[in-house]
Image (cartoon, rainbow over all chains, first blue to last red; front, side):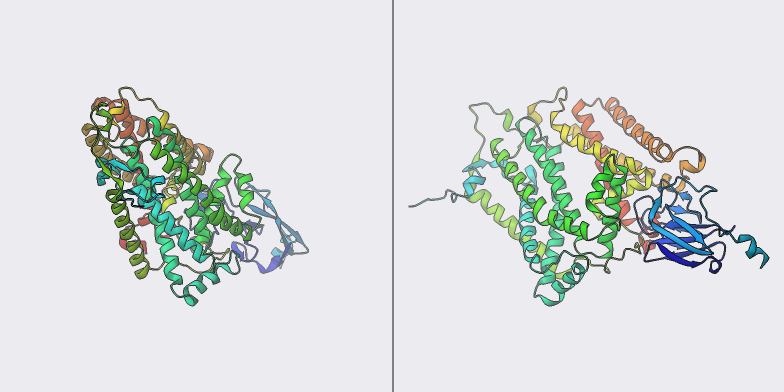
Length: 122
Length: 434
């Protein structure tokens, strides 16, 4: 279980790397959080986030993924794996022991802090 | 007791007392089998020396390779020799296999020996692959990570993958297993297979040579004594080869990157060159095809090859390069076709967008696998039957033509990956490859 700190510290539309645990914490434009494995689903290379191009580009076989982990360019066969995210009192916890394989991004996957509305008010 | 010019006793376990003069001609064998044997011996010698210094643990492996370089006289030289001999061995055993194939030396009583040879070839590749991880540098770590993840696409491969990696990926477990296989398991198997391989050559009355089968009982081929004719040549070849490896090792160092870092894949991350052909295939086909189906089909063909009965092929063309002079000409044509078509295939696949972008709903196994593979297979079949009809080839010649086509295609793929793939595995040309 990795404590990624307060959800308020992450800007929407940003990707934060957790190098030691080898995952990315993604804050989507709508404020939803995804903890994505940093390993390419093709053959397990470490995939860096290219901030300028706004995509994950695998150095090994040129697979590309968008910010939500969807495959933009093959050969990767499926979207980047997810780890379980729980948000308790704005505090983000990532369980790197629980890996979820998925074919593509779906609406139910991001986890929202329960106080999104409050943030809009602030 | 005077022995005269016969061979010392132990040599006679390997060579007969006399051999056909024809077998001595360079173009019969190009001495590739013998060269491979010398390289294996060099590898075992240099490898044994490195065992005194190397430590097979992730925390110490890289440091011990540096220690070998910095603290031992000729330490780096020994490592260089091991490196160059290993790389050269892949080339020589592959060339040896091609030589046997194109001189038809896999038929009749040599059939079983071809199979043993295929096993030996696999051992050499596995040996290179397991040895590749041992320096524990970035190149090693990521090449092995990629290759082990390939098992994930093979039916039942997850079990195999589980043998080599744990949840951290390539780790201490992997290194220890690879080290043991590299230094004990595979060499033992190789010694066993080499023994059978050489014994089988003796049983088949030496290497395959053209024309000998055409002689009647009364006509005897011109024979020469093994000692000195063969032994002298072998000694000279050995000395030249050892000198060559030593000069290379003196002037060039075996590469060693930064220490392995599990969080950073180098860009581009390339497989060792002898697997580059498959890495290039991966850029065009779904991994199930690139690293399972295609290699599996290749291996099946290699094992099945000596048991194919070609119509109109008889023992007379054994030892004749490319079956016939026509076979030779057609082979050259196949080389040209393969060079053009394979390069065109790579270029077109780079320019044309993925099938996935045209047909977004189609599963990747179809869009990246069945469809491109089907197209490629169709192309090869068309080539096979068109050539066969156009030039009225016999079954054996047509088979050989397609084999040449596929071998050259694979070589083009290998060269493309080694020389023309730069950052992000995008195509690049010499200057722009960084």
